[in-house]
Image 1 (cartoon, one colour):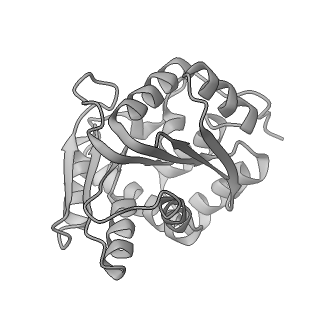
Image 2 (cartoon, rainbow, N blue to C red; image 1 turned 60 degrees about the vertical axis):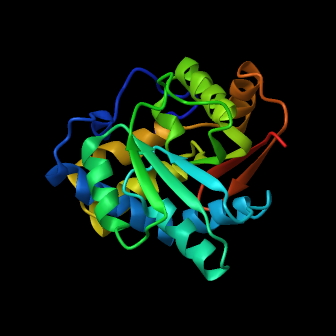
Length: 233
């Protein structure tokens, strides 16, 4: 039985290499998009957006946007409700940005920036809401704190983060899925490691405290995800 009592640090996933070629990264991004859709990740984030609520003209930014599947889901939701939005995806991997642009080419309100989310280029209140899906576990604790502080600076109204709950059932389920259902060598390595790098509720609360964040809610969501909503106004 895998020991998940502590969050693993100092080990990178393969997809943390921003120089990965498209031929290797694109199948993984497509697989992750499918997992997000199958296990309700998109719907969880959209329901969280509705809590603000989102108003016409809002600018929403997805940090660590990967293949753009989250932005596409938000764009469809907004289109169905006739709520015009400006959507910006940010990712440091050139291959991810290229793939995301291709996957969302029919949505004129989605734009992309290739950038390091920990850089100093972000402006105060640059976006109305910052969202992030299955991304923050890629950061060590100190970097995680920096990331949340930068999100807080740039978001006018709030932040929505969904990320993995470190749990043995999820760990072994992802091994099965990436071996049998979506067989992919990179995902087979990265997916269980993602669980090892992810969080307990107590760890998230402690990290938020260290980041100076006090106005937030944490909820457990299926399948083995934490939803963190941070409010500014």
